[in-house]
Image 1 (tube, rainbow, N blue to C red):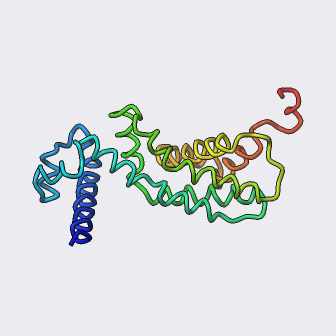
Image 2: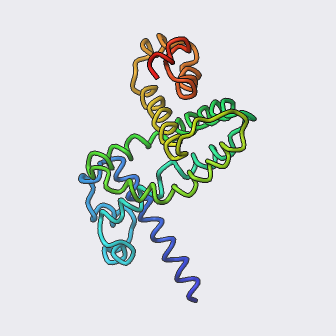
Image 3: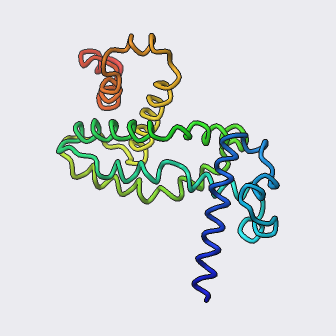
Length: 206
């Protein structure tokens, strides 16, 4: 009997998250009321408060449950390539492709950054940090001489550069993207791996 109650409670919590997720995407956080969540989930107000302290707690659950890191990290961990360069190229391609399947990502991040000033992002990083650190072992097993940099910094720069590629790919007009050549992603990978300076000038500015 207790197992049935737990499963029913989990199903109710999941339904609240799914309903709130859709409403937040449609209307934003502040544009969505608890009453709307209750009505669409077809439960009582008390039923919602059995699982969440309030609307912000629901948003936290939505943000953590629906963030694409659930799909992205496994994809990155199985990226292929014997060398660091090959691995980064493959991982970047997989990351951008996976992000392209999540057209809700910008809305999720917009709500978190604009309506909450990013206050819940630290919880996200706490959840994914162990997986990010495990990626360091994957890098270490690839051929190629890496600079002596903390792996979290390498991971941050990777995520920042290729998230920016994904976002600008969505926002830039096609005419502008065409000016960047047939394979802009390959160019981004080269910038990540080797920087923007020509080898002959690197020593001058080091």
